[in-house]
Amino acid sequence: MRFAAIFTGFCAIGLALACSPDSSSTTSSDAGVDAGGTGTPPAVCNGHAELCGRAYTAVAFPGDHDSYATVPDQFVAADQDETVADQLAGGVRVLHLEMQLYQGDAYLCHSICGIGNKLLADELGVVADFMSANPTEVVTLLMESQQLTTDQIAAAFDKAGLTAKTHQQAAGTAWATLGDMIQRGDRLVVFLADLSKTGGTSFPWMLDRFARTWETPWDNKTPQDFARCDADRGTKGNDIYVVDTYREDTAIASPDQARTVNPNPFLIDRLMTCKTTEKTLPNFVMVNFFEIGDVMKDVDILNGIAPDPGEDLSQFPPSDWPGTDAGAADAGDDAGDGG
Image (tube, rainbow, N blue to C red; front, top):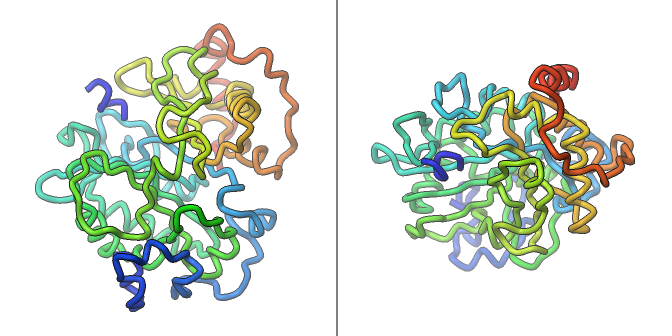
């Protein structure tokens, strides 16, 4: 997103009805049980028994921005210090993926793929491996597409073995609980913003991102910008509320920036401010360099698993970035590894 500013359905499991162009009118409960489902009610969902009985839309999930743009993968404009595999192992459950047509294939990259890229199918394979090894976890992909058809995207999901795990959700219908999704095996939720409208087949598991979600402004350059909790993209009142908390005041993100906004009290005050002013649970808590700060703790607070800190929100936003560079670094280190 920063470099943009500056620079097959359920057919894989053999259900003929799911291959119909009209199958988007069905809900995931019609789709049957994937071989990867538990088949019985799970005891824990995304690490907590308390979440199993909650609808997907009643849960907060930790996520990170430009998940694929990592230092280990040698992206020039990296927003994450750890690979997608390590992000998932560390607790991230919402991956933000920007897709481009590059060298004739579907790749993950910013607008300039020459400064960093990964094959979409390869990264989806990492997600597939994690989901196979962790059968009680619900994972979400928050995707953006440029110059890719939906068929090209679906082919990458097929190659990675993920299509059978995708969740279908008819517009206007109530979302399933995490427990039901895990029991059935349709526990991968895919939101797609088709930014270039290149067409292709309609896949019922590719959910229209900005028809289903609404998102705070992402171009935050001052502390005061983080008081903005309204809808920048999508329509307020859509199913999922996305709260972006990362700085966009430099061309390339840095861990030092994350150390000013990821630790508490800044992050929890930001989230509680948005929850209070918008009267809506922040569902996707999106950050850069997720391992810095308190995103995992704050998601537990939002979910009622950790105690509400009872912060005085009258002091948010601060007039300047919290602490000195050294102090901010200490805050990030003290906050733990986000696991």
